[in-house]
Length: 153
Ligand SMILES: [Zn+2]
Image (cartoon, rainbow, N blue to C red; front, side, top):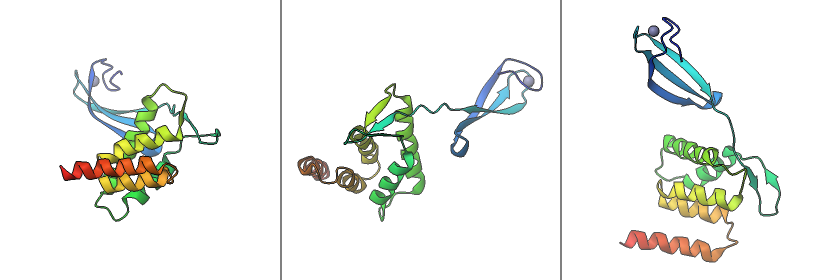
């Protein structure tokens, strides 16, 4: 990345942040030679896997659906909005980084649960009950028992 002021090839990144609405990463750089600062934007290539539903149909990976589920699970819980944003960004990154072309809804759900567990245990159990739709009650109970066990320690 050449400096736009002096053409030097030596610059370092001083700040880097994801710009959600542009789906790009904004980087502030500082030229090692003239010490001036400039900004670059790198577009992130979206390579999210397709989601295979229980009935075998495929649909596009939709972080907004996951957000809706997470927000319901977190309602009236002491979870700040920016923590939810960070959680969703982490989930999205997880699937962007994966090399798989498609994932099952179960895998998506388990990944969300894994992330949610670190955020709020009640929200985690709620999400588990919603996404599994109680079709697998035993798994839900196992989840609950694991949580109660963890709290009892
Ligand atoms: Zn320069």
